[in-house]
Amino acid sequence: MEPSALVWYVSYGSNLSRARFLAYLQGGRIAGSAREYAGAFDRTEPLDDAAVELPGRIYFAGESKTWGGGMAFYDHDEHGPTPARAYLITAAQFADVAAQEMHRLPDPADPLQRIVIDEFEGGRHTAGPGRYETLIEVGVRDGVRMLTFTSPHGAGAVSHTAPSATYRALIAAGLAESHHWDPARIDSYFFRITSPVTGPSHDQRGID
Image 1 (cartoon, rainbow, N blue to C red):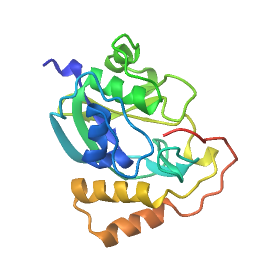
Image 2 (image 1 turned 60 degrees about the horizontal axis):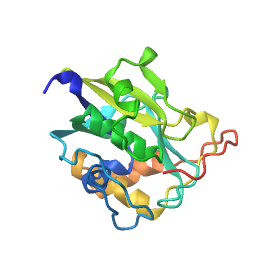
Image 3 (image 1 turned 120 degrees about the vertical axis):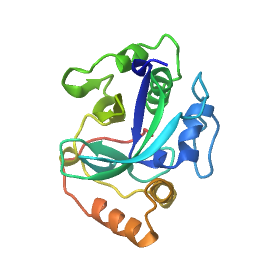
């Protein structure tokens, strides 16, 4: 397969858990979720996955309809690092995953696939105003671009809200799986990223 047909999807939130991420590829519902996923047209499991670090930081904001509590977002422009997990998948699979994050059904004719293959101007592309509709290129690994998605608003532009216990548990499970962190280190990490931060009020409700 040509490298241009592949991307590393880099997860920093609940998709750190491989089982949770596979719901985006293979469809279905996982325990604790209020949402059932359509899955990708290509349901093949990732060709590889790897523990990585991102230069920015994550924060929690809004209220998730899937998990309750705050949703994880990534601010590429803030100081990090952020532990993450990269999955090697096709550009078409990434487009299908991104569509589901954007609360759309995967569609082979979706222009997202072309957008994913193309270089983003300035390393970013905003597909819409929604919470996970900003695509960011965060690096290159083994000659393959690394992509993620987040909100168009940075950490300082919104009020922060705590994640639910279920959502936090999925992220913790993913950190243990991919980075082999012990519970004490995971707790310390959550304490750091959920410390109160005051930001302007901005409506982040209703998505995830």
